[in-house]
Image 1 (cartoon, rainbow, N blue to C red):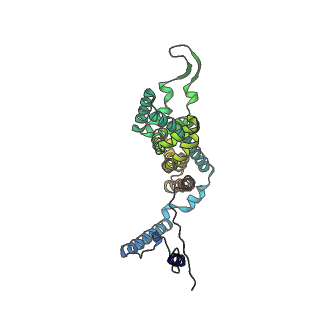
Image 2 (cartoon, rainbow, N blue to C red):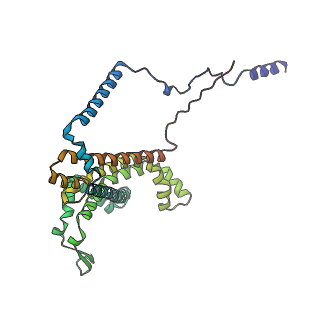
Image 3 (spheres, rainbow, N blue to C red):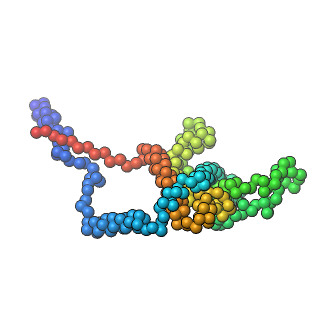
Length: 311
């Protein structure tokens, strides 16, 4: 008994954790390594290149910055910018809807639907977007009348195609269907990233397939869907410039209309570049916010604890 009590008191006197030295950082991943000579030279080269670019933009008189400023907020330019933004939003919404349906068909056990989705992806990913836009714009040549009714029977309702397909609807159809072919693979990869046990757990608690899809599967898949979808939105904002070939009054078409009259090509192109940079920067910001939101609980956060001891 005596030896046991001595041993217990001796053990209790030993501290459970060793004292942490003053200003000790536990996370070694935050250690700062001295910059190597190659990195210093690379930094100097990048600074010199950046300085040269700034000097070139400011000192070159052929950019004609007063002309750029004169047209930067012109009504025609702002109207074209609004059309570009509208096309980007509407076409991306349509592309996401079409892509989600195609992705679900690709993942289903319904053979005809799966084959139809594969044909759709093959056709719209294999043909250039400009050809698709021209095809939709000239649809009235192939299909003068659009009708609804039973096949090979009398139509119930019919419209003239030329009244339905204007430059805006042709642009939306072309951009949405082309984007849906790419969004299908993005949605499919995101949905497949969710563990099958999540599906089983949703069934076990009595959820319907729709409840399981929208409340369990989609929120977890968004972490993998958002980054590539953000890239597609940015690509869509730039791809809208192609609608100028069907006389759609977007930003690039508005710029071309002005410089065809004034012959101030470079300054007007710089106006378009400025507004595209503004739009893309805003999209980058939205994408980063969404990524942070849907990555909660999955980000690697280093917890640094610095304990000090007093003598």
